[in-house]
Length: 272
Length: 319
Figure 1 (cartoon, each protein chain N blue to C red):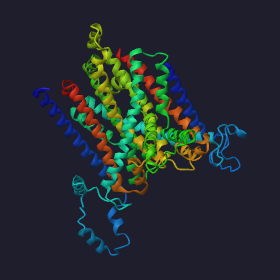
Figure 2 (tube, each protein chain N blue to C red; figure 1 turned 45 degrees about the horizontal axis):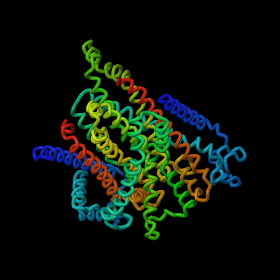
Figure 3 (cartoon, one colour; figure 1 turned 135 degrees about the vertical axis):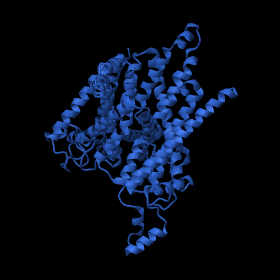
Figure 4 (cartoon, chains in turn purple, yellow; figure 1 turned 60 degrees about the vertical axis):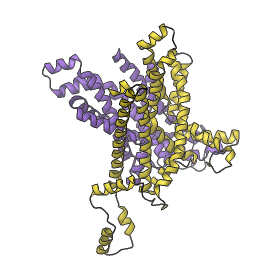
């Protein structure tokens, strides 16, 4: 069952990356920003538009594919910040000191006190940032999560014999940390955190674009597509908002299932 | 409870209170730093177009006794807040505190109600899968929790509005504006939407299930089962009460984030809508007060969780 989760997640990840590449090389069926007023709000399948068109006659499939660009690189940035700095602080706290430990716990609680979206709205009010800066904030707020996981892992591993043996053999701290601790024992935790972090980044981007603070029209993002389509939903025209909503649903579910499946497979095996 | 057992508990609780207070202080500092670093300052906005000469501006600056250094600015701001003065909204000119308290109450209805919805859905699934493992019933239920957790909550909101409009002829769009008779329905729809779509159900189920499985495998539960005592009674505190308060406390901030979006969809006059408006208008005093209020709610939630934990299990929380 966990394999099922993971394979679904991997399919989604591959689809997202492939669509990103398709979008980046502009191999789209239609121009995502081309307005065609003769073909407004058509249902799926009309004259080559596989997913139909939106309220300005723009091809929804192309817009969904281009919409990936709204979160792909910013999301990776958020994940990279969380993983790199989280690992760094986690190692500092776990390997060297109780002082760092208390500090990390304090910062962790501090950042958890802010609802993420409220913090981001505060930043929006203060700086009017674009999506990359917002994702930097998302990344920073995830640092303590990663740091406390790595810290716990290291404190657990420090009592083990192989670390003691490595120290007794005179290996450098650097080698012990990077090879024996991080590479051999924290790889899976970091991968899991990266997938969950990506899911959160997508959620943040779509929510913000929905609220009108993220990616702005006419540049498509799944969030602002749902928002624009929702105006026509009351008339019974489901498709323009449902298509991007389903894209969000399948993608976030893919990342969640991938993270949880990997967690069950890799972490439970280690416990036993 | 004997007096000797109450004393350590009060000690622990006062320690938790100290921690919460220090965290709130940290929160206020972060908020201050963000706005301190932001471009533009309120003073130059105030005198803009009124005073021409450099000297006059400087004189007004001195007359207003605006502290120069950042730490004295922070301290005077903090001092004002401790006396209940959160400033006035730059948009409406009204004192911020009263408005924020009003919307906070609305948001609390929404968040607390939606937590109950989440728990109502999550607890049966968690209990079933902890007791019976993966069966034909729990497997689809688990998949369902994943699907629901990934649903974009704004889209779910629109769909629910559409269904209630076309199937039941209800218009839950204007909260409190319609006749009083059906107010509870307008109240229920957003609560339901946020409870289902806040994106935490799969995590709540996973956490509760893992904790229950862990507790069911403990020795004292095996003993209870062997002597024929009720397992539920013995596992209630460890396997039920503590995990639930823990997961709720850790998810409050996430649910508050979801509330912002849901309030936007349903026109709910809460904190999130006000924060959204304030972010649009760059209304600094308002958004500062909202951020602080949100942080206070989150801290209160985890304070309650710690207190429950301490009362249920004083020995474990001393470690």
